[in-house]
Length: 574
Ligand SMILES: *Cc1c(COP(=O)(O)O)cnc(C)c1O
Image: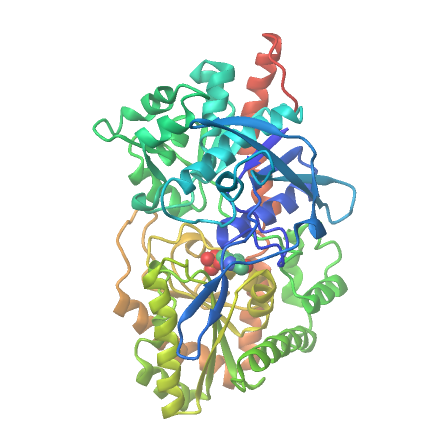
């Protein structure tokens, strides 16, 4: 059994236990575990009040409130309770179980969502895991101890004997403390841990003051043990850095794209990383219209995403009809939610993701007069944005405000550019947007996009990307054939940062001289690019391929260790 640990998991659009790409990737990976019948389970936290319920005020300010949801409608309690020491207290934990069924319905993966919300605990403890990514005090540290140590102990209580722990991003790295306690030898622990790193910014790693960690876990395990393991590198600091903890205790450390491998190796000097480039679940993210289209022309595409290469021979009229239907769903959503009066015949750009500084969500609006000139000359542009800023991310919130203000300026100058912002971005909206736009825009600052996945959802639905050549797109982009790049195509090992103005110049330039003419004047050529996006992108950038690579490159080696251990009398399940 493989135990996949993750802080957030996107299971359904209405279960708000996710904030962005990490949770979406977890949800898609679990679906592929189920489809490929991999013996795995997932451990995550039950975020009772979700991340943030986003409203945007008439003057463009993000307003946050908690996301209430009816847990019992979606999942059942497992009925088992475990106790872990947390500081002076012993706290009780339980979990809810959400089964993810394979597409064929013949296999299930259990997702265990841990919660301390039990009557045995005091009020403060009960509420520890209410909100995802909450900051302040030691709440975050306690959440991560609950995830790592609580999750490890709960699996033991439920009688699971995983041979491998996949620490998907460092938040769950405290499970290493549990393994140390039980296995005692570092080499035995290491053989059982795989670590996927997602963060290319060292300052964003989880770091906690050693004295806080020690005070909270010293009755569970020897915290010095954890500290010593990574201290060699950061000798003077009295902090526990969970990424370092994970990296030093994992047999395999994995980046989420080829570029990200090199970026991460510079962050973790002396370590060699593997990489498994992210993917999306190709059936989940196909719009209903595209599912119907692919099923009509590409027999077997659900089981085998490789077959989508046949998309190139789908008749033009059928291909563009599916796109038009998906686009109408998007336009309806934009018009009914925002009153922006988008038109179905106007070229429409989608841009949606978490709103945070490095993603530069509002870049395309930086020079509104240039955008207006291009749109007036070439036939009109509609841009639909969506995305939440973290409630305490002022930069992110300012970007939403800036989009609002630019939209008002543009509306006062022209009818050729329309801008709309959809509130409360979620799986459902992502699916409508990524299938209904004519172009998917993604312009984070290079080299900070570890992978990115929203552009994969777009490509799957025949929506070409205009995206920074970073993360997954550096692997996927064939310029002018399946989409377009922003910024220079740099070497894998090049760690230089994007130049904002150079990127902006590319965005306006490619729209003016390539993209808009193809769309408005040579639509059959635009259609070819749309088809090439389907034929060349989801065929590789899908989670069935991700999971296959996990199994062959990461998990198999641990199975071998497991057999050796079995000879020494240590029990684990495959
Ligand atoms: C796919 C998705 C993301 C990730 O988007 P990126 O552009 O890859 O950062 C975030 N949130 C939701 C709701 C998504 O569906």
